[in-house]
Length: 88
Image 1 (spheres, helix red, strand yellow):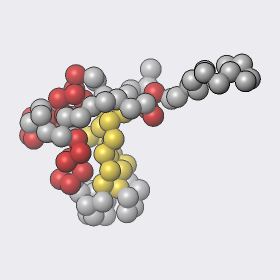
Image 2 (tube, rainbow, N blue to C red):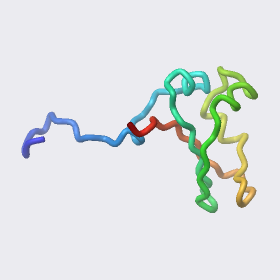
Image 3 (cartoon, rainbow, N blue to C red):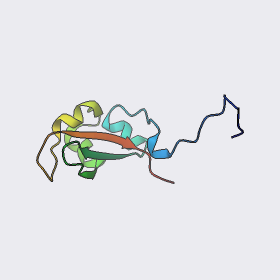
């Protein structure tokens, strides 16, 4: 990127790009990973999208997923879920 080039897009790491996944089935199709982060104790965990889709349904909205999760470390229900691309 040359200085002064306003139209050039900065490089964004793959894990920060928006995937567009809206339901658990989208996560599987796009081969994304689900990460859960507790807002209370900052505990991080990877979620199995296959298990969740089998249990909750492939059309289950990602926005509703955080209401069903509980932190395995502190027990609080203050969990954020993000779908991220694998690092290549």
